[in-house]
Length: 195
Image (tube, rainbow, N blue to C red; front, side, top):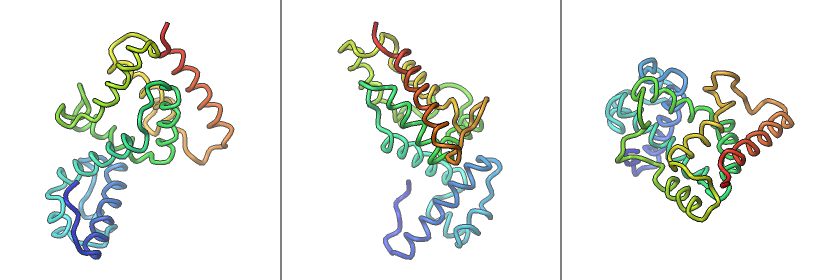
């Protein structure tokens, strides 16, 4: 993200813009988002928003990169227990459905094929190395580490806000989530275990 302002008042405005823009982009995507709604929700003006972030496209890029950082840091991979990682991703999608929606808008509006982010920005290199290490130790099945990672992430998204079948919410009964977690944990374990 762009460098935050040094004053507490500027930092508060900056944070309000980030929060309002995250909500706006998650709901409407890049093309549908409106700067007018963002500045109104953030209680600021366009000049201030542009001073912090540049144009709407740059604002989206900053918000999207921040969302990737959040998922990467909040849900770090455990290549020795990919099923647990999948369940933690499932839980993060319940907590922050806006983050997965931002990635989906990026896929729809910017990158319909290939990697979701530029190679220079790729956030999955540590994950790939962890999977490769677990494979070398005989704990994870053979195969391209990227494909294994992609499969686990896809399985964790089975009930995400962008599911083609059913989008779960945090308001559903706890026992329903526990059943899904158990199924997800078992399926990922079976799909990724060595031998």
